[in-house]
Length: 178
Image (spheres, rainbow, N blue to C red):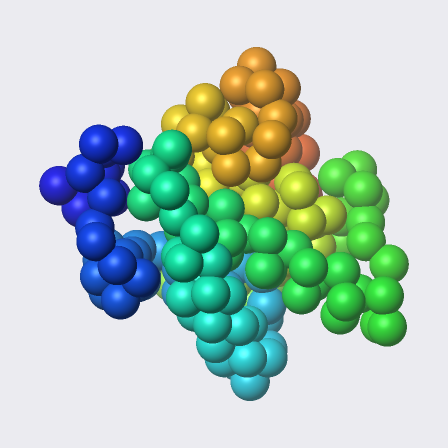
């Protein structure tokens, strides 16, 4: 059953919910933290904050949405708030059109490409970052809309635009490496 818990059968208590959420979605939450924070020490802080807030908020879980949706909603809200706090004190957000391309790596493996893509995603505004991270986790547009509060068509439009711009910026970075 995992993350597709039905409305009619929520676990009986907060501990069970937390155990199910962390077991079912722990890897996705780790990837989410990586998408939001490049610094490993700060990423650990963010992961701990997500876990803490998830534990707190599961006391209010009423089963009106899936546990998966609830978990992602809490995690993305925590991550977005974290990033807003961090960026206020350090640097402004970039629009999709103003993304900077990091210097390309010289290694021939896919690892540099993944780091470049992570870097591009980390430069996005929190809502755009949230949408593309959920998309990369293979969450459908309707569910992303439920998590973000946007309509499904608005999510689909943003995904298309973000993908197009990320692909363009990624290719610009790749051509600089040639």
